[in-house]
Image (cartoon, rainbow, N blue to C red; front, side):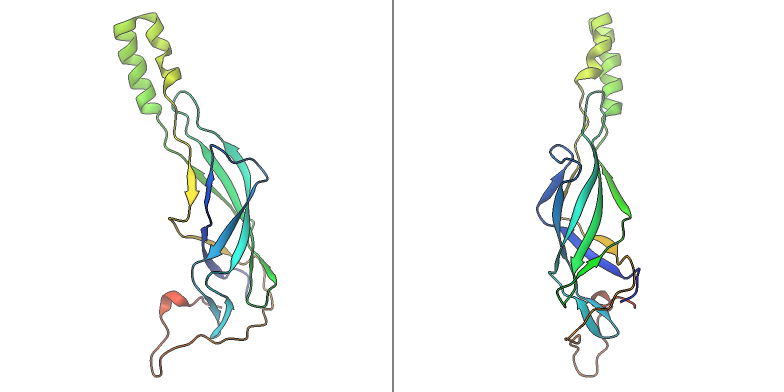
Length: 167
């Protein structure tokens, strides 16, 4: 399998900027078979691992949380780990800075000087990554996978484009 081959995956469970710590690992699962030259090299449902690289929790003044992750590896059909790219994925929570500014102005009008500190009470949102979304990682470098199963197709029909990955 060539380096750069795409692997669609989902996170197993949840990873949240509210609770994650740098160095935490989490499980991933392949969404589709990865097929190269008609051979299944990563089976749908294959498990793998990712890790948390950086965490920034949501905070006052509408500061949104963020989570930086990288995908480490996934199992090939031969049982060996296939290294995925070390390209990081960063997700951000919802910023509440607009609400924070509006609250400060409104509070200052009604409360005077103490109202200028109202923005301290508006918190941003943490980000949570879960199995509701599909993401993509890429095989880091060319590897040999001892595939034993060909992709099944109905006689005379071309295989579905979503189930394949170009070599």
